[in-house]
Length: 171
Image (cartoon, rainbow, N blue to C red; front, side, top):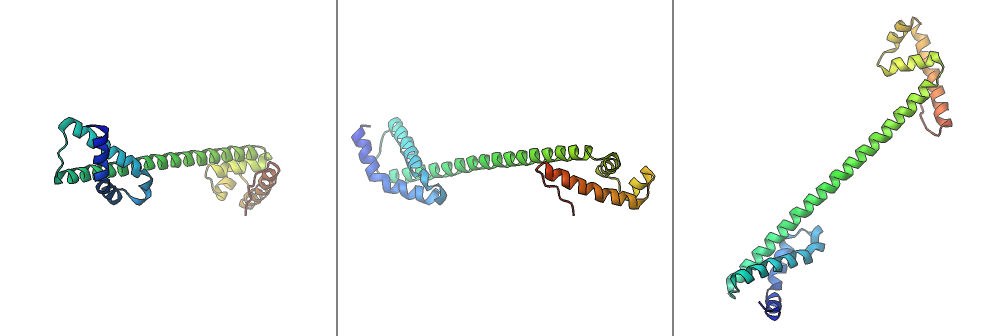
């Protein structure tokens, strides 16, 4: 097919191709109209080169079908790409949150390890899930003493974290 022939073919059929693309290409993907139209005519050109051009009414239907299929293919491709991007963003966000959480845990461990022994022991047992009454029993002290050491230990943690530029406030 000569260049002039193909140009005339495009001019005669572009309204059909554009109608199919507008119908099947989602509105948020309209920026890809040129790509879909180009791919439609590329497929049509290859088929015409292979089989020859028959100018009849079925040509319009054939071209409409190619444009429809290319539009659907493009939408599916773009949705897959969007899904990949969302998955990557979620992965990054989770990793970033996890790293930040891990850093906070390390900082908190450092702060607790710097407490005086009588507070540090109680907080370590709290971390392991012991209740106040279990801690009192384990350390052979009264439960009121455990409560007051937790309270004073929290105050120390708050002060220390503020000095370090962190903000671990306890209610």
